[in-house]
Amino acid sequence: MKNDLIKKVLSIVFSIALVGCTMFLMYQLIQLNVLPSKFLFIVVAILFLIDTIIILLLNFYSHKVISKTILLVITLVLSIGSGYGGYYLLQTNNMFSNITDVSGKAKNTVSVIVKQSSDMQDLRDIEEKKVGTLRLIGLVGTETCLKDIEDKNITIERSNYDSLSNLMAAFYSNEVEAIILNESYRSNVTDIEEYQSFDDNTRVIYQTSFETEDTNSANAVSDITQHPFNVLITGSDSRVGIDENARSDVNMVVTVNPSTNMILLTSIPRDYYVSTVCDAADGCQNGAMDKITHTGMTGINTTKRTVENLLGIEINYTVKVGFETVTELVDALGGVDVYVEPGYAVSTRNFSVVEGENHLNGIQALAYARERYSYTEGDRQRTKNQQQVVMGIIDKMTSSSVLANYSDLMNALGNTFQTTMSTAEIQALIQYQMDQMPSWKVEQYMVDGTGDSLMCAELGQTAYVMVPDQVTVELAKRKIAAVMDGESSETITSLDTSSSTQTEEQE
Image 1 (cartoon, rainbow, N blue to C red):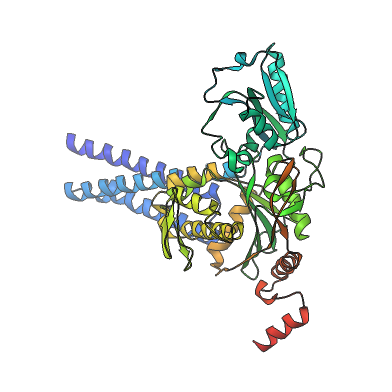
Image 2 (tube, one colour):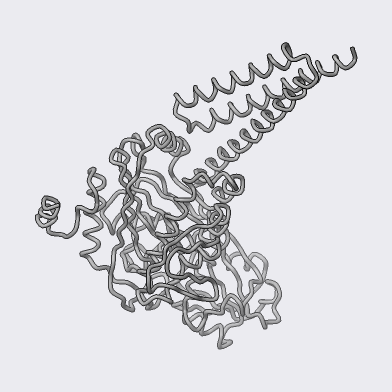
C-alpha cells in the first residue's frame, strides 16, 4: 500500500514537471516567433500529444514496477529536454534583444597617458606638468577630460599640437610629460611605424568617459521578406565595447533581394579616400577628405552617410561588429574555414595559413582579417580576407554544428553585434528562410583605387590612402542597382550598357 502511494505521488510530481517544462518550452517558442505558423502548430500539437500520452500511461495504465519505472525515466528525460530547450530559446530571445538594443548613445573614452618609465601613478601626479593635447582633432573629448582635471583642482601646463605625429614626437622627446588622447585614436598612433610599440611602452593613469548622441536609425522597408534592402556591415576597432566609437576597419554593403534570392557583398577598403558626410550630432568635419575607416571615430552614422554618398544608395539597416569580440564568436562556432589561393600563404607571429583549406580559431581569424603587410595588394587582399571570414561565419551559423556550443554562441552574438534591424524583422527573415528554404546566390565585388599619401582630416597630417577608381565606384553603383531591380550583379560587366547586354545575349 505504501509503495503504491509512493508510485502514485511520483507519477503526479513527474507529470506536473513534464507539463511545466513543456509549457516553458512552448512559451519561449512562441515568444521567439521564428517558426512559420504551420510549423509552430505542428510542433505544439506534437508536444501536447506526447505529454498527453505519457501522462495517461504513467498515471492510469502503468501498474507494474518495470513499466512504471520506464515511464518515469522517459518523463524525466522529456522534462529535462524541454527545460533545456526552453532555456536555449530564452537565450536566443535575450540575444535578439541585445543586438537590437540601440540606445541612441555612443560611448567615448579619453585617457591621460604617460610612459611606462614615468614616476607618475595617478592624476594628482600631473600637477604643474606639461601635458600635450590635440588642438582641433577630437576636441570634444579633450575638453571633457580637461574639465575633469580642472574640477579636481589640478593645474597643468597645456601644449597644443596640430597632428598625431607632432603630439607623439613631443611626447617621446620629453617636450611634454603626459598626453591626453581619445582611445578611438590609439590605433591611429600604432599605425605610425615609429610608434608601433605605443601600447607596450605607455600606460594610462586616468580615464574619463562621455556619451555622444547616436542619430543612426533604420530606413526600414515595409516587408523585409519581399522588398530588396541594403545593410551596412561595419567592423569596429573598439577595444572597450560594441557601444564605443572607434575606427571602421571593415565596411561592406550587403544588398539583399529576397524575391530573387540574390545577395551582393560590396566591400570598401578601409583606406578609401572619401568625402566625410555627417551631421551636427556627429562632431566630425563635414565635407573633409579622409580614409573611410576614420569615419567610425565619430559614430556609425558618419560611416553610413559617407557610404551612402559614395555609392549613391540608401542604406536601410546597419550592423556594427565588434572586432575584438569576433574571436569569441568564431571560437563559439568551433572555428571557421577559409581557402587560400596559391601564392597567398602567410606566416606571421599571430597566425599562419597555407595554400588550400585552412581551419582558423578566433584569434587566427581576426589576425587573418586584419593582415595587409604580407600582401603586395595590401588593403585589397585584406578586404578579400575579410569577406572570406564573414562567409565562413555565415556558413558555420547556418550549419547543424551550431548546436554544439549554442549557449556560448548566443552570448558571443549578444556581445559582438549591434543592429538597427528590429527583432520582428530578424524573426520575419528567419521565418521566411524556414518556410521557403530559398537557395541564396551570393556575389561579391570590391571597389578599387590607387595608393597615395594625402591629408587625412582626423589625423591632421598626410597618410597612406587609396584614391577611388571612379570606374569601379560606378560599377558598384550599377551592380547594387541591378540586384535591387531583381537581376544578377554579374550582368554588369562594364560601364557600357550595350556591351553588357550583348554579353548576356551571347550567353
